[in-house]
Length: 138
Image 1 (cartoon, rainbow, N blue to C red):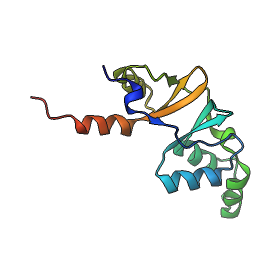
Image 2 (cartoon, rainbow, N blue to C red; image 1 turned 30 degrees about the horizontal axis):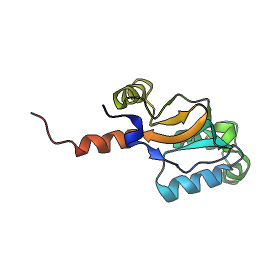
Image 3 (cartoon, helix red, strand yellow; image 1 turned 60 degrees about the vertical axis):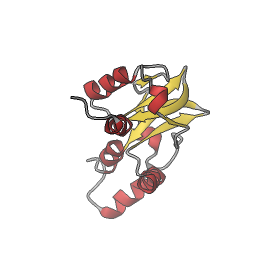
Image 4 (cartoon, rainbow, N blue to C red; image 1 turned 90 degrees about the vertical axis):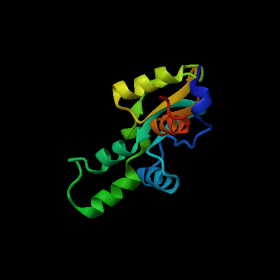
């Protein structure tokens, strides 16, 4: 049986809760990520997604002024807009169970943890890549 540890990204790039959104966006754009684990001392405390960033920058709290929105990128942090205590799986979780969680909750990724320690991340793309490798059945 295929397990999460067989498909996950080990030792993924991470950000700290105090990382400004400008840095989060730069990392996401540079590496093509749509989500990043938020970590303190190796412990997963949250996940920030491209959607979280868009919602924070497009918040009605900010005025429509472009300058204020640009300044927000330096003052709003990952910790302020991340999902705290996100749903996670262990490396030993069956891939079909992780896929079910992603589908049911409409998430793009799950953190892979052992206790509270981040071990990796598994994404919808990881699952699609696995399916693309399988020969056609029929």
